[in-house]
Image (cartoon, rainbow, N blue to C red; front, side, top):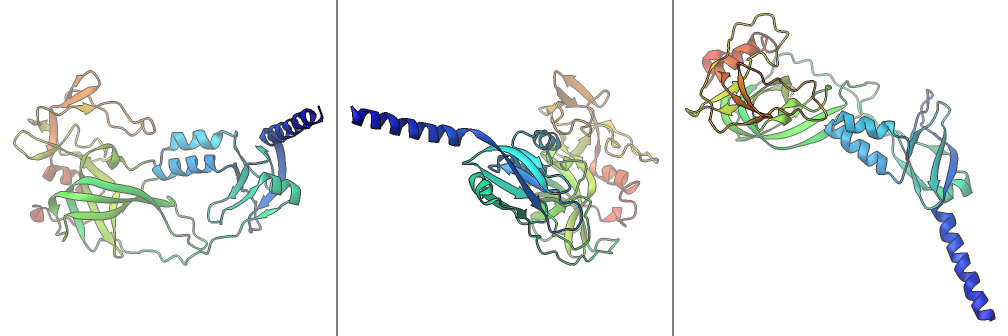
Length: 324
């Protein structure tokens, strides 16, 4: 009888321990950075939210990013005094992080037991040296196809806040060189966009404008055209030639009827995270078949370059006689 009671007691003890550890408790504490200003620090349970928000931020999927950030189920932001309050299990781990500071993590049970106060340590910064070069050392225009792309944060500059904070580092295959003499058939460059994902990601083949500034290659900000093959094997961009340059005053280039590859079908459904910038597919430039567009009118590459020369790239000293 005693052995049975002992087993029951042990079972209840184990069960109550497991049940107790599985229940959420309210964790209250202090987490600050090393600055003398407001000490806002993010507190996350088990790092899931942080990973989701970081992935969305790096991909510039802003809708997904804000959905994660606005949800307070598993994360909190401290107040200006560094105080936080969050629900978690004793077996959980709390992650404390802030941009440009080293992350710290602690078990909930240890925070409660040892009354841990978090003080984040800043990452080392590097001096900022501005690139004052206005004209590119080299300028390349080419038909490109993306091989890879990943977000690359800018260095942590001392006492300087960068507008974009980082950009996409792309590797593109040069399918056809239009201007300039790049020595390889693949090119690596940086692309910045504070409006969301660079729009070149929406298209398989694009006409790209890349300049070299202070020894580094950059896509001229927002400058590109989507390209498709024509029936005679050339490249052209369907639609209004000023579809990405709507505010340009001098609009002298006109779209013309072009025999595009008859098998081309372009999806008219905008991406979920960026429907405001997605181009319109409308007559007389396209014929619509359900949610697909068949291109009817467009512009060839040389005239596309003229569009840019009349606007965003008018000061880049492009010599039309050197276009291949």
